[in-house]
Image (cartoon, rainbow, N blue to C red; front, side):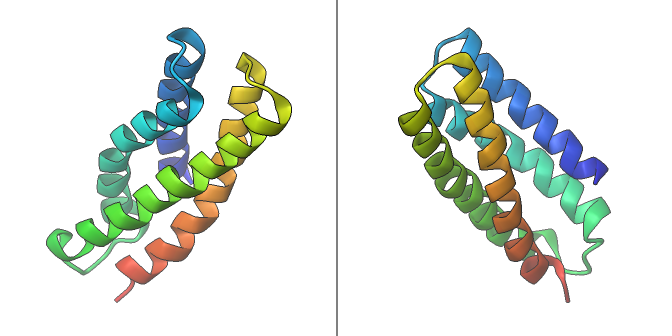
Length: 118
């Protein structure tokens, strides 16, 4: 849970800065923030969450594929839908990101358990 919290906090902080401070379109801000956090997430998940016996070389490409699918496709679709329906403002962008994170978390978990388990 702590690893997920660290990843989520970093993702949300980078996204918030990009979208609400620098005015980057929300979906683009999501692509950048999640792209940055994927590396941190892999290292923490590999070492502490799943305690995998599989090699990093074997798990990294699959992890990146699942993570980027969840972040770039699932989260981005949710963010785009929320902003399209509710309008584009600071509050909506943050609410959209929170909803995207929830959807992405489910997608990540389902993919990760198949990557790291022996």
